[in-house]
Length: 603
Image 1 (cartoon, helix red, strand yellow):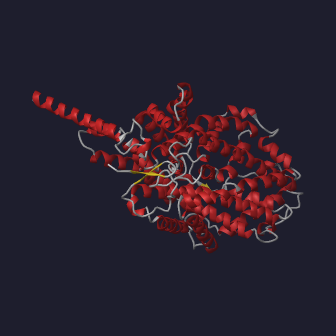
Image 2 (cartoon, helix red, strand yellow):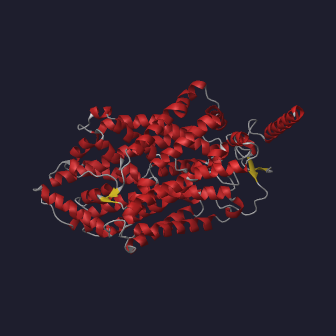
Image 3 (cartoon, helix red, strand yellow):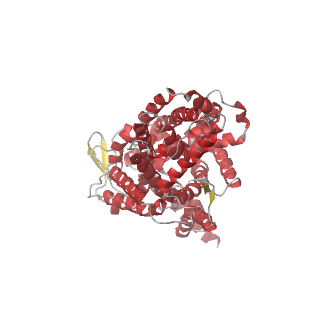
């Protein structure tokens, strides 16, 4: 067992005497002097907000609201936030904070399911590859905006009299986008690396490396800017947008008089709301556990969950106003319905909205602000994605990497850069779409379903609640009634519904109407297999290494291991004290000896 010595510095601080090299993640005032803690509560909250608030808040939520009844969509959206988003966000954050470990080691609580944590890390690794590329796109468009007139403003002209002219203009805008990406005709036509995108990808990797060079100690300082600046830009764009002609039409299409309450009777609307909440809060990626693992043990993770999730939802709604007010102005200029200019995802961020901004006075300024906002939003999410990987490596091999955090970060970001090069070839956008459609899809639903079943039914929801109370204090049974209902029944049922519907209505991905070749589809399914294979592989390995007959092995792996407890001895209390663990193990050994004696006597 580990030995700890007590120091007096702002309270009790525990340090492992075996650790000689100073970990750059650790400061003298940290409660946990082996892993380190957030320098302040603000840094944790801003990092979590930056992680949760991603590109989907800006380029997907507004479109979903418009598509699913406008303001009526806010009803299922906030219902799903309450029954799925907040409960699962709270669960993952509390799970990581309790044991101060990343998404792999937290499964010491249920060793049989530890492969789920490995799968989460693999998902974060793969997604980090293409997320880097999307940030590089934002960087390129930001640099391209530093000229007057904007490159895409001269693609063609629209006199506002004929819809055919406007459609021709939109086609030309697509061509301008293709010039930037040098898009080929499909995944089969890889072509050479697009060097201006490769350089932007390199700059992105350098920015991420610099921000994470000391882990949370450096990224915690960066998020003071990257997590707050997007709100400044959104407010500026909103104020500018609502003063434009046609802005009212755009807002009406968003959540105004065009709202359609009859949409609430459609299952697809509720499915879209649940899916948006699920992915927007980054549930199932491992990042919530990794970031929460650096909290002080008695941090009020319950209140934090409300702050982050409600901020995330509010950001989506606010961004929608900024987006649709300017799209309404664009539709006014083109003399065409708003529905004709509304796109989602890549089309909104890199085609429709930049075109709308090009119609404003001082258009380069607005364009630079918009793409710089996309850059900062993307960087925040990327910080957490890479932190998931480094945290797990540091937890798994502390003696190897503890004093080499900078080298580990540089190596990891360099590998991600090299792996991202295929995504900046002429077929790069097809690779980005392929990874996004397969890896960042129903796979996460499956991982979260295993997670909530393992915690609620195998580890024990009531036991988990007692763990949380060790951190935030005792609560009444009435307080926990709602959370029990969500963790045991409501949330799992919704996840099962989403998972089944995602599989039943799965459509092969395409980009710009161009289908993927058979080998591309096969590669996509192989990526899914590579993520999910770790669940049975790790479970099988642990079953082989365990002792006893098959039933005894299975039972032992469904029970918490000896390493499952709060990281510091001072926080373990009676439930997880070393003495109690020794007594429990001795009792178990004595029972086994007695059972063997009785069996021998019968024989």
